[in-house]
Image 1: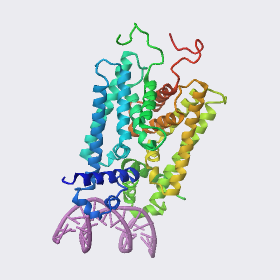
Image 2: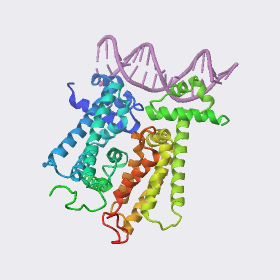
Image 3: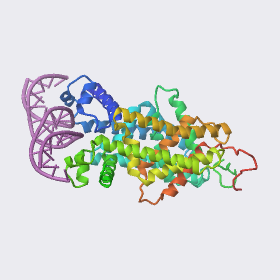
Image 4: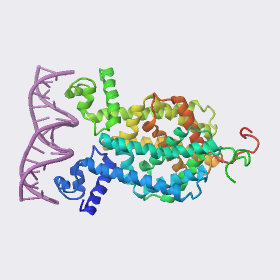
Length: 208
Length: 208
DNA sequence: CCTACCGATCGGTAGG
DNA sequence: CCTACCGATCGGTAGG
């Protein structure tokens, strides 16, 4: 694509409309109207409506993955840092991506099902892998005894759906700043899985 | 409506399709095909596609409200029962409605935005009131000191979106039975808001 | 980026 | 519940 900035404007407009009305509920002419051009003119910049959805979803999927990588690598120089701090880092990273572009995040969360079969399958697998990071950390914490004996798959689903639910209620112009939201959610998530009993330093607890 | 059972079959088929493809992504002919009748024949039983969506959403909204009423009244004969048990009762009631009819629950959660303006507004208000029950209980628990000092509005949104997220991953034919799901989620939700410090040293301490 | 246009499908109605 | 049909809109193409 030559006109990268125009392409981006199209995806901005499409993200907003897909979020409001859904992919199926948004016509190519709706997107064009938002940009003050004719419906057919959109095809000078994109090959199909599906193509626009794919760009938005794929871009956002990569952002979530990259943010999670950075959170686990950067915020955790020591590979044996506690599951609690790793989980909190993952939560903050996820919320950072959501609050930074809540429209694309909302489309990613709700509209990936409108993708054609093969692309939908790809995103499905990447979502599974992403959720797997949460599952692994929870399992680690349970094994170490710092977390309560929760089912890691259930806890991971609980956590990730709560995080994705942010797109349904969070208002960027509201009283709650992104950083405050991240801290509040990190606290809720950590408490949800942390063992109620204070760790017994010496019996089975973690590193010194 | 005379043919109540046929009407119900239509809403069953529509719920399944609306859940899979969304309201906009489902045509009247799709619904008719699932019932082996012609598209136009559907109008012998319903007045519009919107009407079918409204029936599903309104019916499910009422189920959630009724279940919450029963949970707070029945499971809590004493008006001063702890916020923890009231919150757990609300969680179990909500999950009961979701697992009992996950297709209608999914349509309620995701497709109410496709409602026409006035009905959409009504459901929006009822959702707010429903979320308010969670908010009030959390605020009570925070005030009483049994809950951690969380923001009641944030915690209520966190909890309710996590509960609604169940429609996105729960499989009724999976290994996890509805009752086990409800218990696991009630534990996660309670721990998320419960104060980490033992509230009354000596009186309600856990196991050794 | 435009005008002009395509076949397909949409929700819904008429009249049995 | 059917056949026959309606105007509107859909995603997309042709040809500038």
